[in-house]
Each structure stands twice: as C-alpha cells, then as structure tokens.
Amino acid sequence: MTEQAALRGFERFVDDAIEATRAQFSVSRVLTGSRGVSGSVVDRIVQNSEAFDRKVVGPELSEYRDQIVDQFEVVLEYAADPTATGEEYRDPILTQDAYLDALRKDVDPSRRNEIEDRLVERQLRLGDAMAPLVESDRSAFWPAVRDVFTHDEARTFVDDQFRFAGPLRTEADAFQFTATFDPGTVIEGSLASVLTSGMPSVTLEYTDEAVRSITRAESTVVERATRTVDRKF
Image (cartoon, rainbow, N blue to C red; front, top):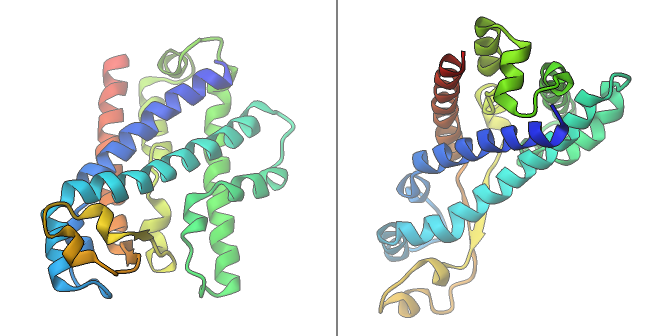
C-alpha cells in the first residue's frame, strides 16, 4: 500500500474521530463557571450555541485534525523506512503533536520530558504497526489490513492504534485547552451589539470538556472501527 493510500485511510479515521468529538462537545459545560464573561453574555452564547460551534468549536477541531494528519505523514515516513530510528524522528513528531501544544506552561521540566517521551513512543508504536500495511501490495487501507492481519489481529490493531485519547486519560492535569474569540462573532440577534459593545476578546478554558468529549469520542470510534473489521473479514 502506498503512503498516500495509507494516509487516505487514516484521514477517514481522523474525520470520524473529529465528528464524534464534536457531537460529544457541550458548549454549556464549557461556559458553566467561566470567568471574565458576564452572565447575560454567557446566556446569549448558550442560546446561540450553533453559532459558537460553527465559529469557535469547528475551527479549533479543524486545526486539531490537520495537525494529527500532518503528524501521521511523519509517522508514515518512519514506517516506510526500514533503517529509520525513533531518535531521528523524535523532533519531527513532536513538532506536529497537538497534545504537546496543549501542555501547560507550568509543567515541571522533568515531567515535560517524560510526557514528550510517551508522546513520541505512542507515535512510533503506530508507525511500527503501520509498517506491514505500507509494505502490502494492496492499493487501499482495508484490503491491506485483510492482507496483513487475521481477524483477531485486525481487531487488536484497531483497539491499540485507533485510540487517540491516551494522554488525556493518563496525564489530564498536565494539559490546558483554551479558545480565544470575539463575543460579537458568536452572538446573533438584535441585542448582540448592545451586549458585546466594547467587550474585548475572551479566552475560555475548555480542558475538562475536551477530556470528556475526546475520551467518549474515542470509545465511539473504536467501536465503529471494530464493527468495520468484522464486516471486512
């Protein structure tokens, strides 16, 4: 399977993961207890949750999605090179790591190094798992999976490699997810200008909701992928 074919198969998985995360994401949970935003503005944003999803949540997830795909391209280079070493791919992998970008600035340096090591190891394991698929002469992802794995092996592959919330399950307190937006862009209606006039950009932390929605989405995606394996075999 060519690297491009593997990338297309992975992109479908990522798109499914982003869709599932967005479906789980709750605007009201993010805004509950938020600071720096008046109650009336919070109420109006909740009422305009579709606009908030479209103009804030959507772009945040789109950026997250693109970074995951860019990182996977690096992982595929590693998988396709039989002489590659993890050390030479460490920096390229970390440069594209969305979790590393969300690491809190006050994390102790020694802990940061440990987390970085685990993030790299996570991607190298994915690359090692992808190597036999890339070597397959099949032209698409799932035919390559059937060519390389037995049914049970394919289920194990999905259960191991289609999980993307690992760092949030083990190191949730080390991460911080924030979004900055102009309240005037997410509040619609006749009172929008009155409520947001002169209000500066707002930065909201949504770490708890990111952890909740991403971990739940992971379970959904793995279940779907496992059902696909059963159908393909």
